[in-house]
Image (cartoon, rainbow, N blue to C red; front, side, top):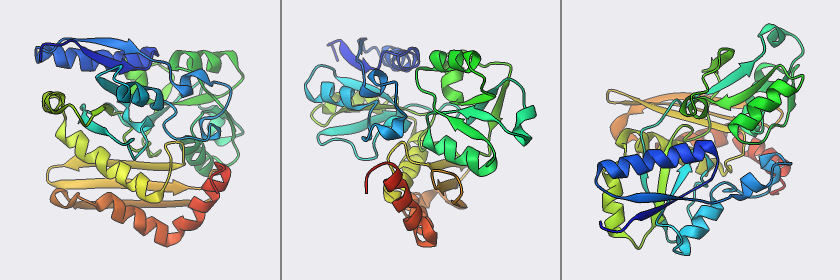
Amino acid sequence: MNTILRIGTRDSKLALWQANLVKDSLENLGVKSRLVPIKSTGDLIQDKPLYELGVTGVFTKALDIALLNGDIDLAVHSMKDMPTQLPQNLVLAAVLERGNPHDVLIHKGLDFLNNHGIVATGSLRRQAQWLYRYPNHEITDLRGNVQTRLQKLQDNAWDGALFAAAGLQRLSLELPQQTVLEWMIPAPAQGAIAIVITDKDPELATTLKQINHRETEICTRVEREFLRTLEGGCSAPIGALATIKEDSLHFRGVLLSPNGQKRLYLSKEAPLAAHKDIGRHYAQELLSQGGDDIMKEIKVRLGKS
C-alpha cells in the first residue's frame, strides 16, 4: 500500500491518543498514515446530557460521513460510542486489544458513600447503576473531555465523578483518589478501539486484519449483540461485559430503569465455541423476565416512544 492513509478521529486528547495507536500499529506494518481531526456532534454540544441529544452515534456520525464522502480512508472510534448498526456501506475492519473495561470513581474521600452524596456523570448507565446501589445519592450531569470533567469535579462541591478506567490510563491520569468499580457493569465494548472503513476497499480491509485482536473482537461482538437485541442506544442504562478464560466465555449483563429502581441482571458461562448469537439469547432472556417493560420506560425517558 503506497498511499498515505488518512485516519479520521475526533480531536480530543483521548481520541488523538487512540488514533495515534492505530497510526503506530500501521507503521509497524510499513503503512504510512496521517491524522485528520474532525469535530463530532457530541463534542460540539456540551450543555445537554448525552441521552437528551436524541440520536445514537453523536460521537461517530461526523466521521462516518467523512468516510462515505471519501475525505478519510478509515475512522477510529471508541467502540462503546458506536451504534450497533453501522451505516450502509461501512464495515468494522478491526478491533484493537481492549484496555481496562471498568468504570472508576474519582473522589475526594469515601465517607459520603453511606450518607448523602453528590456524584457526577453524563452516562445514564452509570447513573442507574449508582442509584441502584446508593439510592440516597444525587446525580448531577457532567460533560466534556476527560480533563474538563476532572476540573469540574475539583471546582464543584461534588463528592465524586464516574469515568472509564481506560480513558484515564491512556492519558496517564491514574489519580490517587480513585476506586475501580468492578461491581458496575461497563458499557458494551467499553475500553475497545474500533476501526471502520467503507466496504469498497478490500486491500485496506486485508491490511487492517493484521492488527485485529480476535479475543476482543469476539467479546465486543457478544456485548454489542446483547445491546442491539435489547434495542438500546449507546446512552441507555445497559451494561455488558464478556471475557474469555481458556475455552469458556464469561458474560455479565444488566438492564436498569433510568432511576435505578428496577434492575435485571444475569451472569452466564458458555463454551467459547458457542459464542455466535449468544448475546442475542442472553438479551432475550432478560426481555422475557420483564425487560420489555423496562425498555419501554427507557424509551419514554429518551423521547423515543
